[in-house]
Length: 183
Image (cartoon, rainbow, N blue to C red; front, side, top):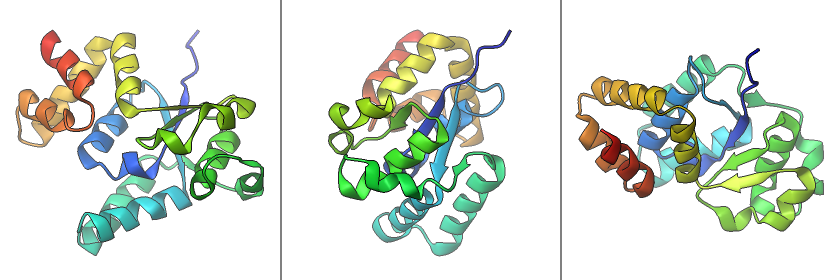
């Protein structure tokens, strides 16, 4: 019997970090190590960041969003808005917590851990985690599959695995070092 996959809410700050997002989503493709979820509001926040803060041209942003919706068509959580007023974490991020609760995702991946404090999440049986910790957990779960997917990501991007790990080390240095040491 197959163990059910953990559902994980990806915050906009994680989705907007392209190389990290690419890595995470590859790990969610068949064979899956987890199931990603997000909301339309999270995607809007992501696309605003890509365009306004990171300078992506609008057609590229639209293509990125379209690819997310096409390849992860079951990842979007809807009809969770009634839960937002019940959330007690940072006000501007309550929509993320509400989406996680409604989507049955006990884990939120975010760089912004201070907006998802334990005391606000525990009543909902949620945990916020830095993407690095989650990637290390996936590596420990299935190192061969993680390495295979990283090698394919590097190949698809016309770079070496070492170069991909160097890029990932900007946001997930311990994970990148762990992979580098194991290859």
